[in-house]
Length: 224
Image (cartoon, rainbow, N blue to C red; front, side, top):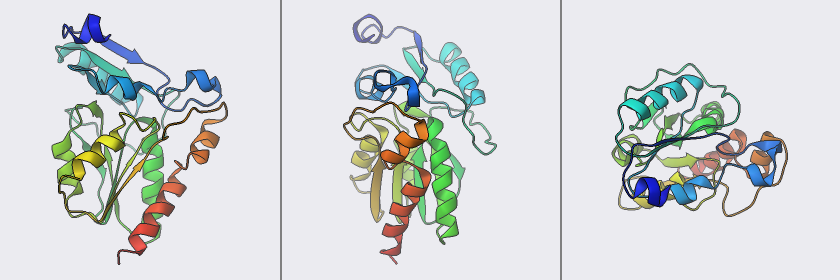
């Protein structure tokens, strides 16, 4: 891929299934390592749809509007998300839920946990925005900055290892001077995953919505 496609900037579209945590497929089949190497390849674009509809739209975009190499990574199974109006530009961060206190950036199947965390935060008195990163490379940092401005807490949630992750890249970018109280990057760290149900693996990694919300509430309570 690096030499035969990216180096020559060829228009080749790769589709990666089983992106993220895939549960009982086992330690050798967890799709959590791809961003670590893909995010370091020049010329490539990486998209992460959150639904069947967005998968179709991103595939059409990749085939007919892009000129260079593209990766579309999508999870095993379907997502269970609120009805979402699809953005016309998958390269831009899309605000899916608006709230004044904090924001969670996510993508793919982990959008479910982001919405779950936002609901719990609201039950505890905090209005939380949820935004879909959509394009993992290059990240729409202008959109990230615009949506993050004025928020007390910013978080990024994903089910990949930390190296090359969006949470790492966004944290590095925001450290350049955006006004916010604190930033939290939620990912799988630097670990291999064992076999098990997807929900069990996410819970063991502290990536369930209730766990994310708990950590965010603790910080927000201390910033009053």
